[in-house]
Amino acid sequence: MADTLEAAKGNISKKGFLDMEVDPTLDLVAEIEKLKKEKNAIILAHYYQESEIQDVADYIGDSLGLSQQAAKTEADMIVFAGVHFMAETAKMLSPSKKVVLPDLKAGCSLADSCPPHLFRKFKEKYPDHVVVSYINCTAELKTLTDICCTSSNAEHVINSIPKDKGIIFAPDRNLGAYLIKKTGRDLVLWNGTCMVHEIFSNEKITKLQVRFPKAKLIAHPECESHILDKADFIGSTSGLLKYTKESEYTEFIVATESGIIHQMELASPSKTFIPAPPNNDNCACNECPYMRLNTMEKLYLAMKYEQPEIILEDWIIEQGVASIDRMLEISAKAGL
Ligand code: 13P
Ligand code: SF4
Image 1 (tube, rainbow, N blue to C red):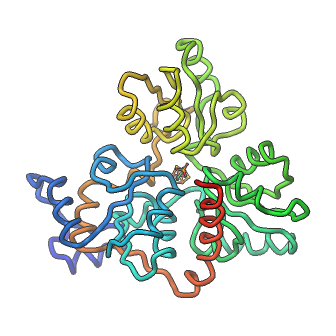
Image 2 (cartoon, rainbow, N blue to C red):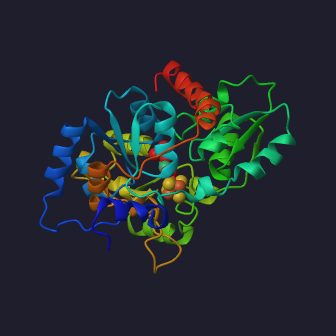
Image 3 (cartoon, rainbow, N blue to C red):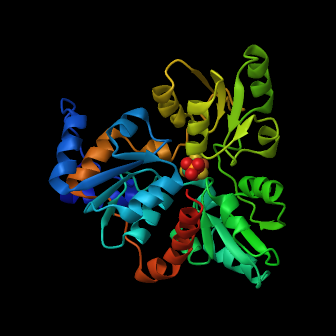
């Protein structure tokens, strides 16, 4: 293993993170707190991060909340404990700031399912359509997008578009199908999915519902329609968290990445949260393999050495940021 920064940097491109030993006796929480102050850094973490990372974050939230924080922070360095498209979004919103991601390989199957060169051809077939892209897409895809959305503002974004306008929705076909039902609009869908949300087992959830008859099934709109059709509540990660906090019910089967359960348990310690089971018994498929690449050690090294850094070409920022700004404007108008 590399033991100098220069040697380690050489490995970032191959491994995606700083390949250096971390002294196992270090108090990582204390060191991270110290680095935050020294470097005027802010840690933004998504709800799908492991609990320890959530506990050291300055802000924990869903994709919309994280973008809003990235746009308004006065920190010099944004440490993004999430995945690549989220860190790219932060860089586009705050281009003068340093944005680091503990592991550059923390990608997203949904973002990967929509390569910009193929999407460009798809878009050419519908020249008069407005393009709405879920924020879970690459920075380059955002340059081909009119308005971004997240799961918490998607309905508002679709409803903001004049009724006589056609709409392409990319890349998540499940969220897209859900929006067709909710808004009554005829969206042209890109055929992408999230590898975590497409694996929940309908049969095993039904068995859990029989075992826990009082439990409410709550689901993220990235889930397949057969799961959404039986859900008692559908929402973004922050929407699901709010529902469990405010609900009179005390048992929930949670059909989204299981990392969110940490905040649910902190907010409602007397309630019971059961992760929805995946089809395959032999994998923790309800944990996002990309989100979980970030570790406390990688977070500490990223803060200490300010690497790996998110670098975007100027044209990508210039052409892509308008779609995120429009989303933030629509959200602000809707009070989100
Ligand atoms: P939200 O937290 O915005 O609901 O998004 C979920 C997700 O899949 C992020 O990758
Ligand atoms: Fe992407 Fe799904 Fe992981 Fe979210 S949970 S980062 S959508 S692969």
